[in-house]
Length: 395
Image (cartoon, rainbow, N blue to C red; front, side):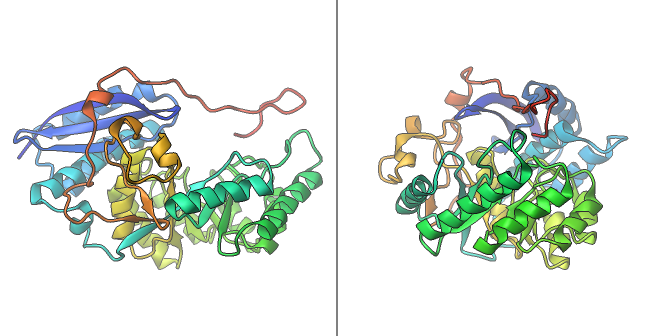
């Protein structure tokens, strides 16, 4: 079995673009992978085409060998676009290796250490505590979610006094705790919008009395030692890692004691091959792994297999697919037209968990190539806020 050709699909998931990759072998197998959506997605096909030159004609079951080749051929460490492309090709190789044996990917990762994978839902649209409660209850009734992630911001952090920003966020969380079910867990994602570490500490500690599941990425990632200083004074669990690229950056973060929960992204760091190394390093530091997963249903499938086979995994970020059946938790009336489009049969939560599919090889999902063959790509770019003085703020 040899890698014969590659196909790249520029598609969409809801309002976000997606770059999906297929590697075909000379004996008819296809492996699938998903790139991270960094923004300049139309640059990815050229990077993928370059990397294909190192894979074509090779045995796809030599995953470690080929991933190492793609990384080592670069004189300098690959950055965002390079690693997004390598991640997707790594996914394809693991999918092919498992399909060649007729087993799920988690089986060739050493087997599953858990029977199902817990997920949490991001909820960013509820303007007040009663509406947040209603959304939580709807997601719980339909899919069994008991863990949710919110934005902590209640007012414009740049147009208001910082103390008022902190007060309104803490007051919101207090109202939530008084309004929602006591078993619901709430995480907060600050989206790296804070520049000063002292302000990150103030906000985290204002939320801490109301028991957040974790406080995610208040600062930008570049100055890793600062994360250790931030964590020293925090009274709640700190989570970060979505913007780090490899095991070496995570090693520095962990040596600095800079996080309680590591959040590598399987579409950013180089795929499962690198994610497993990161998880092992985290385990040696008594740190759990909660993968960053804002991507589409194929990335969710890849994360499911990683999570199923990883001892120090804790919880997975999850986006419900598009369509009315998914919105209301109707497992019995799901059609391809209601689905997330490029995955015909996405993994869906049951009682707040994703179930494994032991009878299905590879990632365990079917791809809708007809849909991906249409021109459904949409442009996306990050919205960068401006301060009252006209300067750009962190996004």
